[in-house]
Each structure stands twice: as C-alpha cells, then as structure tokens.
Image 1: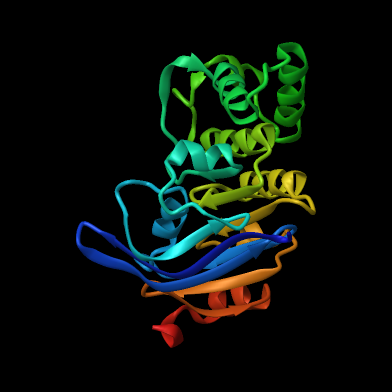
Image 2 (image 1 turned 90 degrees about the vertical axis):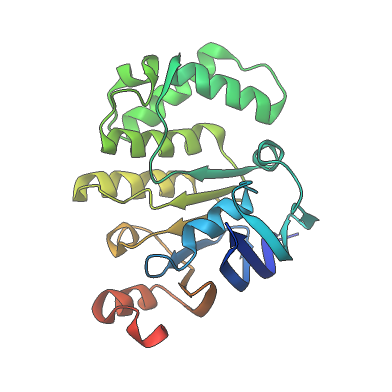
Length: 244
C-alpha cells in the first residue's frame, strides 16, 4: 500500500475553540509535503493532532496511518508505529545524555536491543554530516544548546530513529542561512521512497534545496489550495490575503 497518512474531514477543538474545520490531507510514501499558512491557521494543531496530543480534542473526522484508524491511540503508540515530530521549541531534559535518549527511543521503537558501538558510530556520522559538535551527544539533551543546535538535534533524532513519517514543525524558524541549508541536507539524507515528510514552515528558504511534491495553503482550519513548489514562491511574493 502506497498511502501512508490519510486525514478525512477532521474537526478539532482546543479549549472549546474550533481550530481545524474539515481538513483533508493524503500523504503517500515517497512524498514531501509542505504546509504553509498565516499564524493561527492551525498548522501546529494539525501536527499535534496526528500524534494525538491530549490538549486537542478531535470532534469528528478520522486520522489513518497505513490504513489504520489512529484517532484513539496514545502518542507513544503512534510514535512506535513510525511517526516522528520535531518541535518549534525543543525541550531541555537534564539528567539524560543525547546518546542515551536516542538509544532508549530506538529500543522502544524497534523492540530490539541497540548495538551500542554500531549505533553510536552511525549517530556520529550523522552529526558530522550536519556539522554538529560531536561532544553535544554526550551532554544533557538540549541543555545549554543554542537555538540552531537544538534544531539540528531534532534532525539528528529523525535520522537516527528513521521513522516512516517525519513531521517537521517550523524546524527552520530562527535559523540563519547556513543552518537552514544544513537542515535541508538532513531532510534530503532522510528522504527515501518508503517514507514521507510533512514540513510546516513560514520560510521558503528551506525549500530551495529540497525536492517538494506538494505545497498546501492552510487558512482558517482548512487546506484551501494545493499545488507544486511554485505555490510557495507565490506566497512569498503576495502573502495570504487572497486566501483569507
């Protein structure tokens, strides 16, 4: 089956406020989707709802992953099925090193013991590709990291855990041109025929070095237009006024 994620007529509330209003989206294996839209349109809500963040309430509609309804699954079970999400503001976690976090997560996802030396060597290889300080992996997760280091660390986690679907929620926000190029490189390294990426962004710069299949404009809780990467350029030039 080629279909990885399917969202059908999804309505979602947060604290009694309606945010998603009949959203539909299909993501197939091998595809890269970009979701753009003005602040408050529901982009981050969509990312959180796919992973069933309890702060958001599904009123109606269905989220399916590989043909299975995951509406009522807990976040950890959805992650175990192969869904990964990066965060706009990654948490600092004292007391656990980056490498131990990755080993624990990999073990939980695969259900198999991690071959420590082999895994660490693989992670170090990814860090070299992402131009990351190799010492960061031994430090407490994200503690004292710069904004750019935190965002690169999210991409490192994606590469090391190798999910079926990666949802990147404004991973490029606040980054300089070189860091954005590095994040794009990490996405390109991850991308394969059997996985898929959803990139949520305000910034078209991250798309300059990526092959994008679809760009969606999300306004007022619905996807109002879908096209190719030329749509992102149109938004950069003209904004969202015509879609509001």
